[in-house]
Length: 193
Image (cartoon, rainbow, N blue to C red):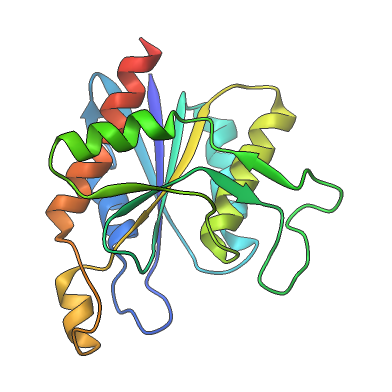
């Protein structure tokens, strides 16, 4: 079995991005016997998919789990990706209005919470690149006729990132973020077996 995990590079005011750091840390590891392959994506429309879609085609993963930095206080397990960019244009012309994540979002959220990692369900991934990659991966999988389990988790900033901006928002340690992501992967792998 194979799992593709993606995260993003630093962007905007952030000099680090915990989503990319977790993806890098997991690259090459084995989780429940599944090989993890990871990629850190640029925060540029089109460049993200230029990298990730060939990875899906080449590696044929059973699970694709994308990560991105959000502003919440916990891990947000995203349920829906919409066919909309920030500039009101569709991600895919004539594509479906939305795709539901194919990961069991509620079960994953509950497993993460049961382990003591703050998590919640979220009902759409926004309109920036996190939504873009989630929608694009789900659309690609649909067109390809394959059935990998695809989903997205927004991760909160780490304490050092919050401290750099004056400490006005909540945070989570990188270790706790990674623990939650690994729990999600373990849950997905055991579902596949």
